[in-house]
Every structure is written in structure tokens, then in C-alpha cells.
Length: 185
Image (tube, rainbow, N blue to C red):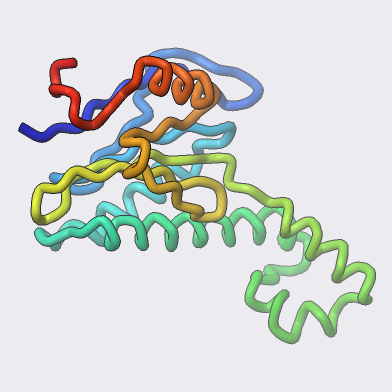
């Protein structure tokens, strides 16, 4: 009597080009899956694989477990992006080195402040809808975006992502979507 309904187009956008026929969905556990969208979805496979590996031996997976893994993996991917896009010209400087003692000592205050501003502007440009059933078979849906920020889907009973998310939100509200509707409806 419980279910989660998903819908997705197959449009895959790479910023400079796009095409149809690519799934934007991945199973991360027998009871959990994630959908993704964004202007740069190149991090999606690594994030989903790492989460799947962490959940593989587990049978008692809670919403909190999955949510924490998504936050951690998004933040790890963000660090990789920062190190690649901002810090790579500085001889393999890591974000940890930059924020500890190496960065402040190596750069002038003005250069350091400029790099901090660049780092603050780095975004993953990917978002996920995570859906599944916990160990008590309670359905869950939530959205994870940008730096690992989580939007809880429990109040609305649904979550949307991608370029059509605002239109989809309006559609669901206009048609008075409720979680109490029969699954078929």
C-alpha cells in the first residue's frame, strides 16, 4: 500500500550541448535510489557509487544515514572542484593546506582574500532527489543540492529538481497533490 512515484525526462544537458535518452537515475541500495539534474552532472556517478558502496553491507538503512552520506559526498566532491578549479595552479595545494597555515603564509592578504572569494563561488551545479524506504518501510523523499544542503520533502510530500522544478512545483500545488491520494492517482 505504500509507494513512491517518480517522473523524469531523458534530456541530458552538458551546458554546451544536450541530447536525449540518458537516464538520470541511480539505485544506491535495494530500498533507496536517487535522481539527479544540473548543469554539470559529471560528479553524479562518483557520488552515487560511493554512497552505494557505503550502504552495500547494510540492511537497516535510515533516512538519516542516507542523508548524511549525501551531505558528506557532496562536500567531498565540492572540495575536489575547488582544488581543481581554484587551487590547481599552486603546486598541488589542497583546500586543507590553503585554509590551515600554508595559504595565509604563502599569499598576500589581497591575493588570499581573492582566492577565498573564488572558493566561495564554486558550486557543484548538481542536485539530487533521494527517495526510498527506511528499515520500517516508511517512504522518504528529500532534495540535496549544491554544497550538501538538504530540503526535506515531508511537508510537501514531493520534491523537484532541474530546469523545470519551479513549473513542476506549481503543477503539483495547483492540482492539490497530497500523499494520501491513492497510488494509482
